[in-house]
Length: 233
Image 1 (tube, rainbow, N blue to C red):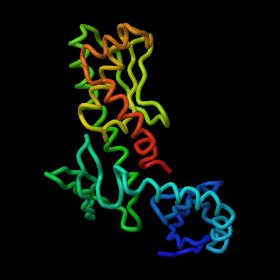
Image 2: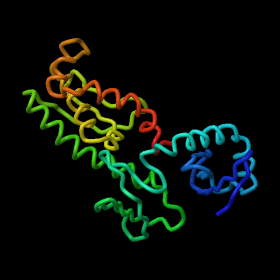
Image 3: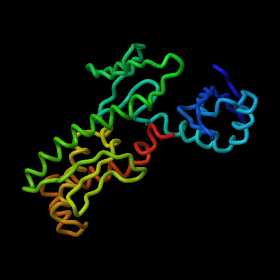
């Protein structure tokens, strides 16, 4: 795997040549760059491009290092519904993820460079669709309301929303939080089916079904930056 020195950091990088007209640069992890280029871009040109974007790369890399100790997903583990699972990578013909006790077995079929984000994000979204639909249906029945449609999204700074058409959106990243935190979010959005605002009546309704909602809301506020920046290039 090739390396490039940018400032004080030695980065490893992968160049993926594709049928495209532009260049895309992403930091997959600390000290690791993925650059996607047209087929005719040489290694020398890649070096020039990466040095040209050295400030952005160093800033992004510093952010990774700052969040590394508390990151819910890193090279060693993932966090799912508030619990850490040790990562075990294995090569196979079919991409799959299996949780067993304290471990997660991730099977990948890219022999060159398996990107965890490419594998984990679709899996988290799939789990979110199933679990959040179940929890929404449960809490909607408690409130004697119903949701029209439940959609999983990847917002940069919002955990969820509820429209006047009774459609509820959730951010898949909430699946990294503990079940009590997830339920708070579901109760919050489901309560909007009755109170489409954040009035005192709304918060009283939330508190009726989640007496610790202030604690759970604070947890999301304090941990939101870390979760929102996990697996985001």
